Structures are given as C-alpha cells and as structure tokens.
Length: 456
Image: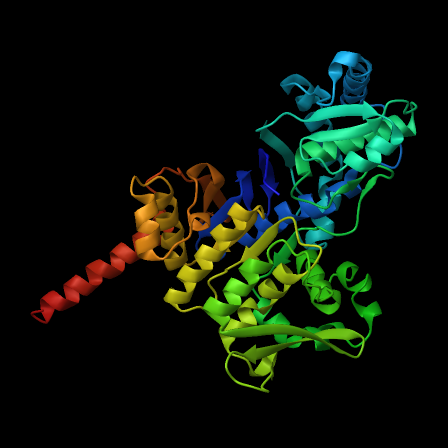
C-alpha cells in the first residue's frame, strides 16, 4: 500500500530539543552523532502512530475545531445525496481537509504529556508542543454515502471512505469524524480504523526494532518470564522498558509464524539469501515463541540465537516480522547497519529501499556512512539517463532505485545542553551529510599526513 500523504511532526521543548520538525516520507532517515536524540525522536513519532487512536475521546466534543469537522461532514453528506455525486463520492477540498487536521492537532495538544509518559515512562520531561504541520495529499480523500451493505463491501478503499447515508447524529456522526480524521493523518501508516467503534482494528501497528534488538533476541525469554501474563499487558505499563521496546518483546513472544499473505515476504527471503545465508524459524517453547537459525546447505542443523552469528541475531526479528501476517504498515528500525560488514550494509540499504518502494514506509536512525552512501547511490541511479543499463551492469532491480521525493533526511547534533535537528536537502544527485563527511575527511587528512612523514 503506497503512502499517499505527507506531513511533518512539529515538536517543541522536548528532551533537549527546543524546536524540531521531522518530515515523514516513504523513507525517513535520522543521521547524527551518538546521544543527539535520534532514538528519542523516532520513539516519539512511533508513539503518535501507535497510540494516536487513544487520543480520541469516548464521546463527541464541543470544541470549535470538532464542530467545524461536523459541519464539513454535514455538507459532504448533503452533497452526497445528490445523484450527480456518483461512485466517486464527494472529495474533501484543502480547506475541509485542514479542519480535520486541526482537530487532530487539538487532540494531540490535550494528550501530548500523556502520550510522552506512555512511550517513555515518567523520567522524560514534559513536552511543550506537538502537532502535525505541512500536510499534503497526492489524491484527495472522497466520502461516499450509500447503503449499509455497500459500506461493508467498500470500506478498504485507499482514497475513499464509505458511510451509511442514513447515519444518525450524535455517536454515529462522531465516529464518522474520527474515521475521516484517522484516515487523513494515519490511514496507511497505522492500524486500520474500525468505523463501528472509536478504535483501530487489530493488526498493522507500526513495528519498532530498537538498537538493542540483538541482545533482546537472545534474552527476551528470561526478560519476560515464562508466562504470557508477564508481557501482556503488564510489561508495557511497568516502566521497566520504554513502550516501543516492550511492544517489540511482546511481538517476539506472540507473533504467529504465518507466511501466507505477508506483503513483504519476498524481501524477507532476499535478506535471508543475501545476508543471513540461511533461514529464520519461529518455534514454540512452552507458552512463548523461540527463534532458530537454519544455515543454508547444512542439513539437520538449527542454532539458537545465542549460538548464531551476530549478523543473524541482528536481523532475525526484521526477517521474522516481514514474514508475519498481517504485515506491518510502517517500520521503525534503529541502526540497521549494526553488526554488519560494509558489504552487508550495502545490502541492508537496498532492502530498506525495496521496502519503501513496495509500500512499507521506513524510519531509520543510522550511524552507517556506508549504508547512507549506498542509499545515495540508489537515489542518483533513479534519475540517471542510463538507468536501465546501469541497473543491469551493477546488479540492481528497478525496485531498488529511490525517487528523491520519497526520501527525507534529518541531521541531529548535540547543541549546548540539548539537541538540534535540521532537514537536509535531497536532490537527484544525493544528500550531503556533514555528520559523515567531516570525520571521513579528517581521517583522510590524517592518513596523508602520516604517509608524508613516512615518505609514502
């Protein structure tokens, strides 16, 4: 499923950031030195997607922002009764779309401190401002009003929402406002919204792979214990782990090993073939899952994670989640280059681009200059006049080139006692990242200096 909308998360006075703007695109990269806040910002963005539905109140509101949405829906419904509205429905214009974004921002403003506590626990400072800005949509969202059976049959359309023409006022209208708001802001990157209730349906929550995932893969069973009750729901509310890590442990513990219907199964197989040189298997051990590595070409051998190569342990969770069904709607991954040789980092960069092009938006934090340069190469290749011949010569597929409009890169650095972030310019020629270029240039100068002294 493609990502049909774009928006930027605006944050103020949070965890050392005075002000920050993070633009979300199919591939979003956070680059910068250690301790500059990349992981904090990624976790906050994940929290908006994973917990945003909990910000919706249980009953209709009375605020001006909410009532503006109600009036917009009433106008659309009145227009939708006309015969000339047709199958395409009534498209929300920019002004009407903005009304629903403003109401979502009102909910974010009221619930921002609660959301931060849920994601990070009580040790994280409060947050000054949190809102969605710079919203745009490639295709306007259309509202179609029809019979109940038509609503049930067509509820999965990417650019249309179907509602019953005779929906009553009050709770029914409130659910419609919630559904439209969710579809506009988070529709294709978070769990599908259930129009019959103010909550998303099960499945599809953004997957977060933390930087410590290799250690967690080895130790998650001792961490969560031997009983499901230790991880659902107590673990995520105990404060022992940040919520993204707790959800990661839960997913490891209970994710079913269903391979049929997984949207990104082919990429999982590609990773197993090109990086793991073997297969990741989930096996039941008591009430919790366990994971094994089966090396290719070695009959009858299965290794526990604690005995597997580091690259295998690092990538096991990613491969497994890509195989699962239902598939995730967004992927957050910290340090995808961890434990990988430079050649393997290049393959990992190709996998991330493959996923973004296949419809799975990716947010990645990285220190990997090799991984970053490989993404730059794929970006330059996309618009190259000799693209087809170069893809064949260099061994790339068309799905591994990257459109510059699909990439967002943000540089993080430490500033005084806090952190700062800046969007980097993305062009058809690549992205210049000082955080990588400066230390490499310094190292090169040092090499030349040492060689000069040795007469080299």
